Image (cartoon, rainbow, N blue to C red; front, side):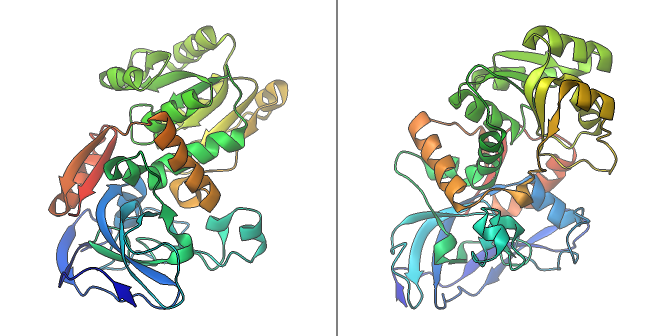
Amino acid sequence: MTSKDSEKCNRAAVYAEPGTVKTEVVELPIPTPGPGEILVRLLYSGVCHTDYAFCMNKISSLPVPTAKGQVGGHEGVGEVVAQGAGVDFPEVGEKVGIKFAADACLSCTNCLEGFETGCSKLKVSGYYTPGTFQQYCLSTARYATPIPEGIDLVTAAPLMCGGITVYASLKRSRVQSGDWVLVSGAGGGLGHLAIQYAKVMGARVLALDIGSKEALCREVGADNFIDVLQLSAEQLASRVGEITSGGAKIAMICTGNVQAYEQALSWLGFRGTLICLGIPDKEGALRPEISRMIDREIRIQEPFSAYKASNRLEAKECLEIAARKGIKVHSQLRKLEELSDVFQEMEDGKVKGRVVLDLS
């Protein structure tokens, strides 16, 4: 093993009582990378709504509840400080990111089709595998994402999940220049990134959120904004139709709000595509009207939540675009000890943009 670090402990935030927002900061040993692994000294970690869901045991599709003492997090960035046997790249000193998918087999049909997060041998950062709410984290070398020049690490951290998710979903939707992309939950962590990646791809963006988030949405590029609290469902659908000349080409639901899913199809025009990103608190929120779907030839894109997001190529593309085009993350730096408070703020819907934990 080669190394360039000499600290003696690893401060980490663990889920103290899964099912609640309670976390605890503990000191753990600094791990040693095995064959094919690297050790990363993490400097920042974004906090994703999926981390909150893991802590609260709210994702029913996962096979087992979150374990007490689990180190959460899956949006980490830092510097390689040690290599295990057989590792040539990334080199010690390189800046890398750690994302939701900690490792996959890369040989099964799902992996070969680019659906690496659907691998039956998938390792999940912050759920099956110790995640990025710690100062030192092991990563399979082949799965670490290089951080390009021209992007600061505070910005890069939330892109490791939030940015990758919205970029990959837009790429797969085949958005065209001039298309209207509607972003619901536009002022949130996913939404404000979705606006920017849609604009980079040449789309026009209609942002939907509460009025207090209008300034942020317009700052990051939204062409138009609707305060969802000021209109009834029928009025909202009518207003969307007026702005987009008959309905959006793509509607991205970046919130778990039940009402957003109940109304989503009414916002789409002919051959529109619905992209489901936020996870609603209850099943059945999306109720497709088959006649409407047939008449308008509406497509519902495969669900693209944070825990079904992208592959290694899309992660690389996402960061390169951010570096070249100046994607901005509206973020607030918080301490590791504040993670429980952050989760509570997420539950209360008080977070604007993204929260990034300072691990330095």
